[in-house]
Image (tube, rainbow over all chains, first blue to last red; front, side, top):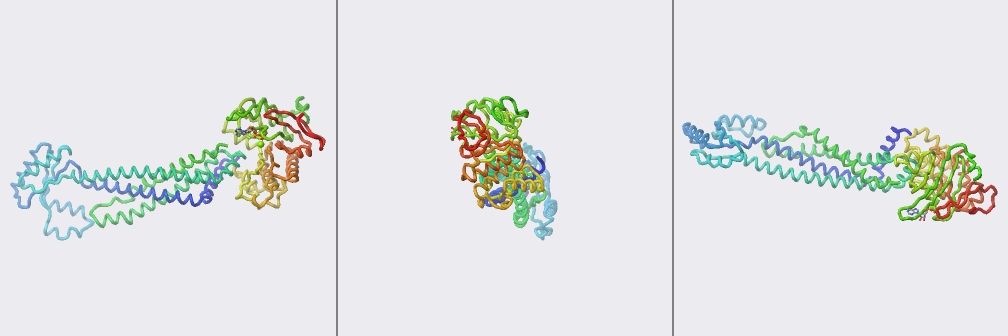
Length: 296
Length: 246
Ligand SMILES: Nc1ncnc2c1ncn2[C@@H]1O[C@H](COP(=O)(O)OP(=O)(O)O)[C@@H](O)[C@H]1O
Ligand SMILES: [Mg+2]
């Protein structure tokens, strides 16, 4: 008995199995492509939300904008009043000029937005207040809004909070969907292999009769399943990339000022995860369904 | 070879099959074999006969490892079947060729592919397969039907394909469970004639049949199974002599 040739035979047998049973193979394949595409898109969404959260800054920060007519001594007063509030760690002045500068830097890719701003700076002088703990931000906000000449208090925590809420909702939905789609894909693969094994049950019986090893028969069905799931995961990977780059990223870029996370940043991790998932589903699904045909 | 020869230990070689006080009780408490002793030596041709339900197929299942004896010891081609681990069964089966009443051919494959299949699952080389398949197909007289599918073959021809498949891996023992059960008397005779020819070429052959006509026509050793017991064991040398329990 030639082990290597045996393995080669089992693998080519698995390949043939796909076409024996083409309809079911295509259904499993499409199901897996669809599932992974949804999962992949959700993952990209989460990554973008994360990057937005990072971009917005940390949650210990509160911005206050001072009214346009405030004089320099008044600005001094605001600064010292803000610094005296408990839980305030620091208070940094950001002039309207320097605010414009940093905005220019951030938006260097969209010079059109900044047109005319040099001549007529729409920004205000502001203070960047650091709070010792985000927990205390609310109290500090209240105290800050009581200071004269303070026109607007903007806690970044609010913005971030809402992003974080969105993010955990998306995360929850993603995880739920992943599990659901994973389970569905698993059962579809299982069924495909079960049907394949059923249509070939005579062949399996004869293989057992002439003394084929169970492992070789298993290998042939595992091959069949893994080819389907692997093809599905690779297709889903490329579709996710295409969908993201051509649709999602372009839309986001066009509508907002958000910098979109490039697909390439996470491409390898996603590919690896897709392949791993497809292998697990393919191997486990086929092994589960083939055993009952191997009893003789 | 007569029973007396056996008892005298005439066979110097190890037995191909040795049942010692073998019992089989199925899970539904049916006692299919009730302490059977049987020795089959290399090169023998043995008929197993008996009424339906007597326990004949159970003996085949024991030999192929589909079933383990409830008690007793059983040796097949050097394997201790009563102690055989499941993982060793494929290796044992590769030393056997099995033929069934219903042929068990794969309908989507040609005769040639059906036979080659049994070699391909072991990863045999293509050239070796081609050569060996041609040889066994010629041996069973089906050289001209290599490309025919089972549905295009008569029952007798299908059984010949099954025999070719059983032979293709050059087993030392061929067992056939009612190989003529679905065939008319002339085809039945031809099949047993073919198995006898294979036996003359050196393979040990065990054939189950309850066709007394065949037992009469072939002068091979016959054992009778009756309600799970070995009821008779004799050699018919003269055709036409009425066989039956001793
Ligand atoms: N898998 C099984 N489970 C329970 N009883 C069985 C099974 N196979 C056979 N039997 C019983 O064992 C006895 C012997 O059966 P079998 O060996 O098939 O007889 P034969 O081949 O001589 O007709 C019969 O009574 C049959 O009903
Ligand atoms: Mg029977």
